[in-house]
Picture 1 (cartoon, helix red, strand yellow):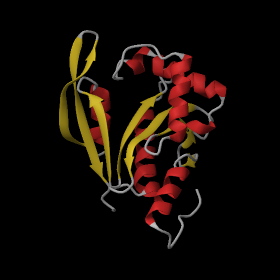
Picture 2 (picture 1 turned 90 degrees about the horizontal axis):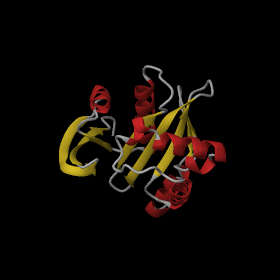
Picture 3 (picture 1 turned 90 degrees about the vertical axis):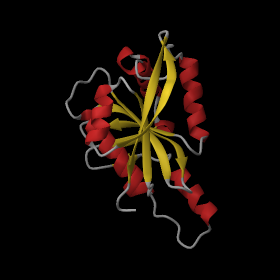
Picture 4 (picture 1 turned 30 degrees about the horizontal axis):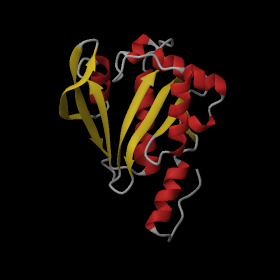
Length: 196
């Protein structure tokens, strides 16, 4: 990532940040590969992950994502100024999961994160590694002040992980998601960058 331009107007700085969020990033334990750089094999791999029952059960919809829907999703991401998606890959070349940053508000320095681990890879601590990496990207690289995450109230593993890494419950969206004939509430958690 190149250094930020000095002495330029606010709009130019925001544009610079948005464009650089489409980059790949390397951190100590994980490399993040931007969705705009995925090859066809990686695109299909992510689509299959999104359709895996262990991932899909926590999404806000139930249907299987078609190749056409997935392609449109990726095209929309490539031009969005507020949504970014990366594949997490360790330094041994293993794909570990997905990291997203959405609803990015650079003026107020906040955004929402999303993560999920590769469904067929059972390595203890993978979710924690991915979450620590997105916090580092959001707080240390981008300079955001607040991160939020939404998760269904029944996703106990995710809630435990977020709380372990410093996220606190901010509120609930009551009966927010309708799946399999039932309403589910969503918990909103947040963490503040203490160094900002």
